Image 1 (cartoon, rainbow, N blue to C red):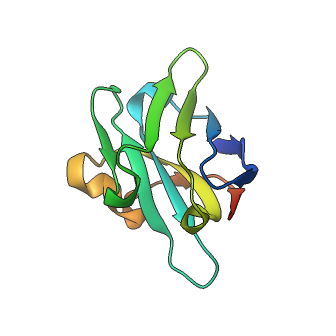
Image 2 (cartoon, one colour):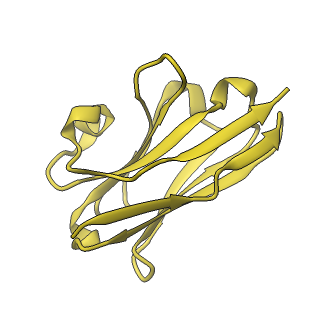
Amino acid sequence: QVQLVESGGGLVQAGGSLRLSCAASGLSFRSYAMGWFRQAPGKEREFVAAISWSGGRTYYADFVKGRFTISRDYAKNTVYLQMNSLNPEDTAVYYCAADSASTGWNLRDVNEYDYWGQGTQVTVSS
């Protein structure tokens, strides 16, 4: 079955960095766009970043532009989220997701994704 397993979360001080990883199995990784979302306590899940199936296009939420970078490694079936200049507002559970059909703007829509990981906690202290 399809599995998306996130790792790399943890506790970091404001201004610090983390790199999240999401290892995919049970699907044709090259055929899926991949996205990162996050959910803070009491808030809805929100789009963070996405990368097209080809890796040629990336998309970011306005609040992470210039700080976060999404990338993918086809040899390892893994998508990454490099997070720099973290601030306490970035504290949330971060989820990886896979989408077989959407492109472009639709990759920002949480409802478009077919599969989800279990999430990894990121906590940024002030």
